Image 1 (cartoon, rainbow, N blue to C red):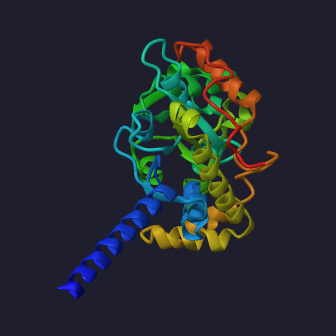
Image 2: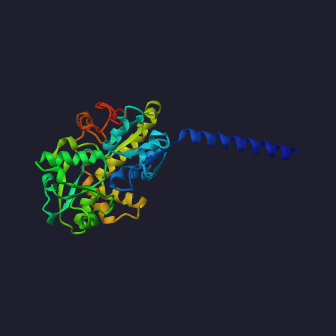
Length: 328
């Protein structure tokens, strides 16, 4: 009987220690959800590098990277159903610029320092500059924002926007769209531009950020809930410290970073991923003093343009972004 009692005491004590250890482990590890803006691609590589190399774990963070629902990452982050998300200045600004029911969101890092999106046409189309879009079919996402951008570009180049046929098009294959339905389409050069070179398609490309500096906005960015940032600043700093290491590694070793992305997304075209990674490596930080830093002048220039165009309800210049959580 004494042996049985002693065994029960030992078991109870051991169970208590295990529970205490479990509670401590839970306390020492924060579960973080990151929602992407799209399927995994080279915009996201630094996140996967940080995950694969244990940078998140070293900060005490248990990070899950998930793909977005149909309405994107912003609603999940605003509702507190994800701690971080990948999105864009052009969609974040309307979300926080509402007079009523503005979403509590803030951009905490720029993934790519300059806008790498623009307009692609086939080389034999003869469409080389914005005014050439007059009388042509443009693949439209049917939003006031993108319509206003195209109108500004065309009219700024002396073209007639009224003659541009804005065709609703949600094609995921830009090349099929250009071959059948439209004459021009908006792309991210690091993906579709590189894909064009790989498949031997000769294209014309209009870099909208160079054509008009107003459109050198931040796309994509990492966002978080502004309330979460104010109450969990230490976690935001830890998260960005790890992510910064991931993107810095991707800059130094594009091939190694590409292989890590392919490890987590093996369905991707390996040649496209590797060449896209080479293209983006010098562009993640570019001329910024550090990866992730948002230039207030450029941010406010685009935000001000959106307000002046009536695309957002409030003038949010100076709002919606912060660099305070980035590592020095």
